[in-house]
Image (cartoon, rainbow, N blue to C red; front, side, top):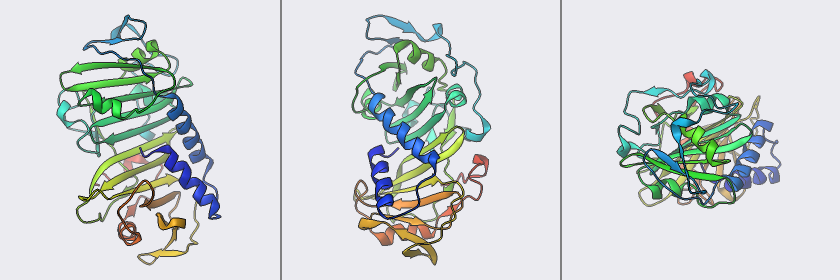
Length: 322
């Protein structure tokens, strides 16, 4: 997921441009995400293959703890947010595949999805992650091919507890939760034997020459799509983000720019181009500030070839061939 400070900056830019406010759903997503960024990281250290080492010096066996009120072992992913299953080995069977394809998540956690008010999947170079608000607290589950990879996804800390394990050689699991006991409960419902596809409500019909997807993310609030996107990187290090945020009932077709004959809006600073007239979605390409190296013409070319789902509320209708 891109830095939440960048999302907040973009929101402020849009208000300054006189654009209609975002749907309240997205505002809640950003607010919760910012709170999560402040609270989600901790500095407790330790590692074991079959147990989680906690700061107090003891160990908590994963199998000895069960779920809380919103976290029940055996919980099922609600259909509205269920990622498509992929017939490929999960992280435990194939650790080397983790964090190599942003279209894939090599683990599942249906009990977390079932009980979460907000959850977000990320697949990036070297790691894959699920972040969620559950039982009125925030948790994250990160897997990677090395301890450095999972720790790189969490750069600073001011609270909570972190526990780490190495389920099999070549695979690290990192869990952040409100306390060590709850982290162990989270660990008990993580399934490392499944692979899922991280789908998005749009299809990329064009990418800048030489660019490849390096990160993808997908988030839901109250089982409703909130946001999703993909970050592309060129051979020279150039980056752009193609993203879609939920905006219920949005039908605005006004703009100051055109893309392939369609109305669009070019934001101040020429760092983002958004399509107009897309039902229920705000679709844009970000090329400035955090994303450098591409021009407005590159963003226009991507948007002109983009195919957007007409049924954002039904994940089963989304493209699976990005």
